[in-house]
Image (cartoon, rainbow, N blue to C red):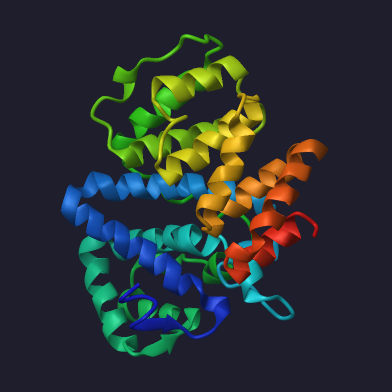
Length: 312
């Protein structure tokens, strides 16, 4: 954000993705320099899962799934989501591919930041600069800019990631998705895994289980064997609680209520309150009571959005 957000800033809230999409892109570029190219591809695949999950929440035809939404009569706070971050990253990854890869695109990123430093930028200005730089390339001439910028729902499935790191997590998640054994799994399954890989495993399993909850026994085992149920990592708690609550693991509702009052990030708080509210009248009543008791401690934007979700 020091470069894309502070040094170069979106001109209006409609172009918010220029902050967040570029920031995700540069963040993953930095991580790839520190940990190797595989980390960039893993981060891309990880973000793709998060984007799909968010699009399910919004609905495929929701105008707020556009990269450049029309916000006439809409509070920009209501438009805040994963979409500008990960759909923006997805588009930039595609633009890099069309330009000929990182060797060609990295110098362009530097020029972009230098050109708009200490100023504001729109999506049209990005498009103009990109076409001036790469417009002679056949792949660039095929880019459907209006569809990318103003189309609702999922982006075209044009990106493929060489995600060897993430594949191990997806393979293990698929095994857990298919098992009905309450003694499944071993701590050695994740030997040598970095925390981000464990988080990705859980987020992918949440996606696999979006239509049908896990059995209580399997979800309990999942929490025990990998120590997710006692984790202090916010990302692990967030994803594991979604699996455990829907599976009916005893004590999970209490853990969710504690979690959403111990920290106030809307990224975690809002989906978990919505989960409680949508499960049934009893859990919705618990969610409302918890929120009302702690509302004053939340950021005003977070409090406003959760109140809307709980129909207060």
